[in-house]
Image (cartoon, rainbow, N blue to C red; front, top):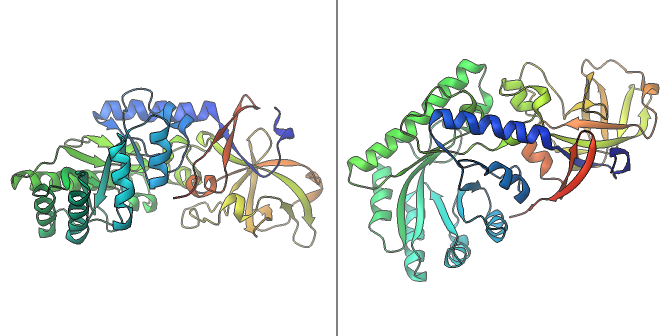
Length: 376
């Protein structure tokens, strides 16, 4: 199938770029001496998972129980559910474990640990658990030197319904770093916090065989990962404009794009109207704090080549407005109604979540359609 035959808007995945991105990260993590546990929260697709697992990786990371069910149904059993577990989800998690899933949960409080331990004992299941560590102050987790760390560890270790497996952290603040030196420093901070937390548990006689870290920026620039056992980058598979703005990748490494059609011209402002609005692109403006603001997406021609400084400047539900980055009017006559364009995503996770499937392209032609498992 040719790109011109697809109904717009739709999500394109360049297989060659995907495989190149996977290969690079796989080689990098091998040099760093850690096992990959790729995060599939962006991909949500078994075909992508199988490509990502080709090599040293044996397990995956996910962000919803729906993803656990989906990947387990497709033969992938070793899964870390890397969002703090809600008590109401424990019965579902136990059912998956009984069916053979090697499912590991995470939590960051004694209250959550007590809930997991009690429910596990009541259900006759021993939940494997990682304690989430806050390595950057950006999100969930407990400080690696907090007294609560040992309290949680002892509670889990002494329970009949849980098994302490170690620690996990995610340096989400790396997405806001200014420059590669800052990302390297964040990678070391992430590593140090996780390793120190594991050491504290071990010093108290508690098990911590797993030390899990990883964001795409920190895993791209980490200088060493001594003491770490596994890494969980995710968006590296596809990359996006936020990653490009951080210097993590080049524009040409971005494997995802949204195919759209010109449906009109906004004569007063000199902008194009396309059929990809925020429902197809998302309203993420993650590059607004970077040196180059890409609006809601960078505009490319049908071959994926950026069209100068054209960006999506505004979005409504089903309409996108394309214009010049500097706000000056463009020559709309160069893009007649029906012209097809491709838009590179600001945040690959958010853009991909709007679509049910990838139209997989190789050498400019569509040769497969891979479904996604959206939802929770």
